[in-house]
Image (cartoon, rainbow, N blue to C red; front, side, top):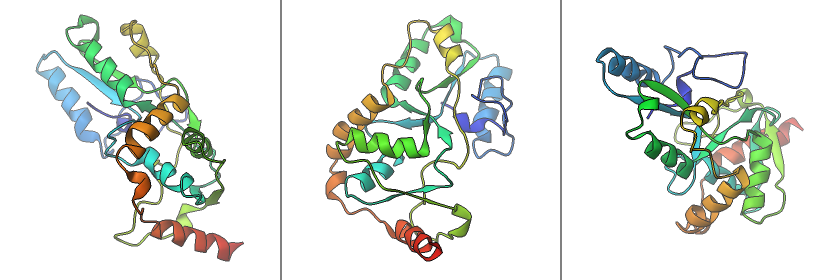
Length: 222
């Protein structure tokens, strides 16, 4: 299991498996693992998801938005909210992994895995509100360079501040009986019901200290 985070900067999108890896990436050990397995002549396949979402997500990606839209809070989004990103449902990822087992077509190959849809930062906030049955959220844009988040405060935003999305055409070609079954909205509805509500996140008190810092900066700049 690798990550689409291994890719280096590029002006051409979507990312493909042909894009070179970034030796300075925090995921560089995943690239090194692929190279090692290949050098040993082993039977290996590497999967590079973009952002993963769905039930039991250890990374609070969609939860960031659900925490705010379900409480009627503004959603703080960096820049102008137009950066495009991509998420893949965990069940679609698991389905592809299963179909790789015993499949000679995927030997020694790397695959981007995610959904077929791309979404802007603003669009993600709106989709999460729709998935939770809430009104369209108030979105507050801000310059992340103007906000210094103190140690111990929550992360300001769950996505990297750049366009970040990948082609999954190679995966669909080499494993023709696989394709994502979840649209973004369907997957977020599943995540909201089967994870956010089921695990009681709606009854917890999130830490909004970073939001308050951003909102106070935005108000003073207005």
